[in-house]
Amino acid sequence: NEGSLWGGRFASGPSPELARLSKSTQFDWRLAQLDIRGSQAHASALHAAGLLSDDELAGMRAALDELSERVRSGAFVAADSDEDVHGALERGLIEIAGADLGGRLRAGRSRNDQIATLVRVWMLEETEEVERGIRAVIEALRMQADAHPDAAMPGRTHLQHAQPVLLAHHLLAHAWPLVRDLERLADWRVRASESPYGAGALAGSTLGLDPALVARELGLAAPSPNSIDATSARDVVAELTFVLAMTAIDISRLAEEVILWATRDLGFARLHDGFSTGSSIMPQKKNPDIAELARGKAGRLIGDHTGLLATLKALPLAYNRDLQEDKEPVFDAVDQLQVLLPAFAGMIATLEFDEARMRSGAAAGYALATDVAEWLVKRRVPFREAHEIAGALVRLCEQRGIELDEASDDDYRSVSEHLTPDVREVLTVDGAIAARAGLGGTARSAVDAQLASLDERLSRL
Ligand code: ARG
Image (cartoon, rainbow, N blue to C red; front, side, top):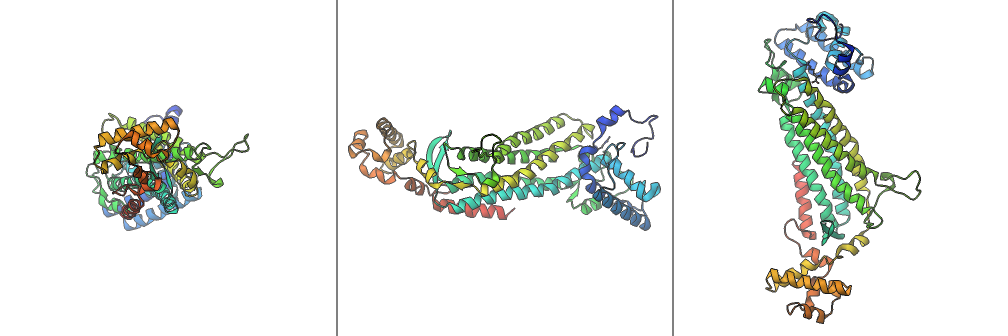
């Protein structure tokens, strides 16, 4: 059974049913170049241990380079008979280097330590593009915040008008979770940079191979301290799928708001033609498909994450074939964000906000009632009473169908003796916003300070 890594003790080859089930080349082929890099590093370890001569090492390196080239050009591809990428590449190596040299490479390693290492390197490298995508969304939010320094909008809780806020403040509220996602990824990198190579199948190797040498050549920080853990742990994979799912969820919350902002009823923002879609039947339509796909993909990434957790639950040590199921979810999560984030960043960067419309709704729904209450507190009225007074004013205005500042002096007096006409000085959107100048507040000065600390946090990453 040419191309198989384990024929020796079997009287017959695998049944076609088993071969079909067992096959993973359709998804692990994307690890081929990394597998070859791992093989180059492993060849160095074999050479350092005296198991490959100088000439053999040179021959092995050249053959692996050639194999890499053939994979790149498509001259070498997985065959039907290949179980996985590792077996296929050994077949390819032997085609180039012959069975005597090519057959020496597998000494002291197992697909178990090999795959555990490759997945880590793959994640570390591919996640860089995701990080760039997250940064692009943060940049887009920051750019929009800069472009609209004084735009006011209704701040909401329970989706009801609550208090006016600066658009910039609200946009940055979406940036911070993404900054934390980047920080999570940076933190995850430390744990992901351990190298399982050298752990063998589970117990290490008798051949005196130096795992630190392999780790170094692969750009990983250090070898795993426990060979059993090295081959069987996938928590770093699950940690990444969590952070990616969380990122998608954070994006989906912004997506949902963009969808609402772009409705005709709200009309807070218009989507750029290049970042919205039309309808095949309704000529007038302009749809927020990017935001909807973001919302939809968040569900998919949650599935990737929870599916992997379910695979890991109660799995005994050490390697079990179940672990092969780790790859498709993490590949999928990374793939999805790699296409989603650039489109999403473009959509945010090109949103056109209707400042007048946002501002006109900012004080609606008596959103300045808290300002009335706090104005009373500053005049020594206990907050409990102030809350009652402001509430009574809202009731009166609601009955009359007027705004808080439209009530007459007599109206104010009828509500409370504390409510003098100069309460009107806090009944403006800009006044309400400017008054919230404490740390993290919505006043322009506080938002400026916030921008500085956002930049500082990003610069530390
Ligand atoms: N393809 C497997 C995986 O992705 C690695 C092969 C290990 N197979 C084995 N029978 N030990 O996890």
